Length: 215
Length: 215
Image (tube, rainbow over all chains, first blue to last red; front, side, top):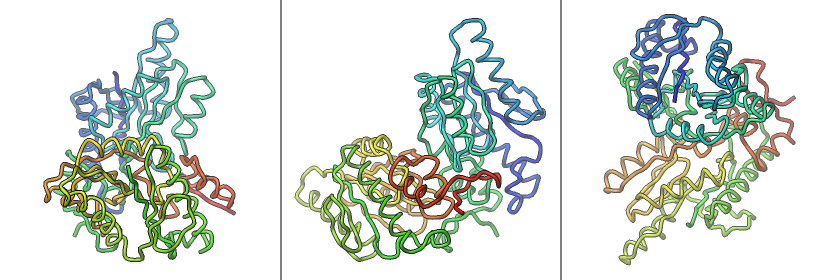
């Protein structure tokens, strides 16, 4: 299954600016991207990076500097739409965000399996975000603004596409804010967790709630 | 499978005090408890409430006003420990928190299935909490302080118990803080979501991040 991984090279992870410098944010975002690409490949997916600018990774890269929704919809047009217009069976395509630092092959495998069984399978994130999905309905398109998970369910309903939610905490955890770093230290198994530890972050439970802190 | 649902009747959900009055917090906590009990029963579990004081629910209630860790360990002693001492096969027992307002029968079924296949199966919550687990190792006991998920993995390792994580966002979402209310409005299907709507809460995405607000 082709798996599109959108990645922003332009001021990535700005909501981590209180705890990481711009260079650190770039390094950390890249470590998360590499973890996601590895997990996709290990789950049998065929990753392709959809980046806002050139990025040096092993999988193929498509550069599209338009906003996320526009760029992803162009990619969906080129796959689902083209198959649909030719009257061919539509091959499912996945879109998996690059900041899912807890993603494992097992979690992605569940997503891909769900996507083979229905028209649209989706793993929501905290706050109603859309962290990952598989679509095989020729008319499915995205709108990443706001509580996009609810909008995407509505879009699926409007076009008559069957919809399934994928219940995964690993795929549901996108790493955007300082609180999310603790999740990477607790559950991460790859480069992003190593990067945080090497940058001096560790878990601290002294305030009751567990947080990632560094001296 | 017996499923213990700890429930505090004493100042429940105090971290919601900025958005709910004490009476409202009691009502909302009770709505979540009822949702969890329904989901447990629908998943084929046999729920038993472990409450700090009397509570009027259909399933059996055990009152134990000691701290959570002590009360749960007493319950585990009485089940796992007694089976183990008699040299009998240990029946798995589950402990599922009463504030998992997004829990569905399907999510609990995955937990129960995982628990039948290993010694300790556990669904972590945000911040390394332990939201739900199934144990069938006679020596497994809990310690809910701090990043308890990591401590519980360590305890399992020390007693030679096989451990499996259950990757569920529904079981991983305990409702403690105002931010969590949006999750209930987005994904909840039971009394807790209805209670919030009737109390005037609705989703608001105007600040970028989706929040539950009321006038």
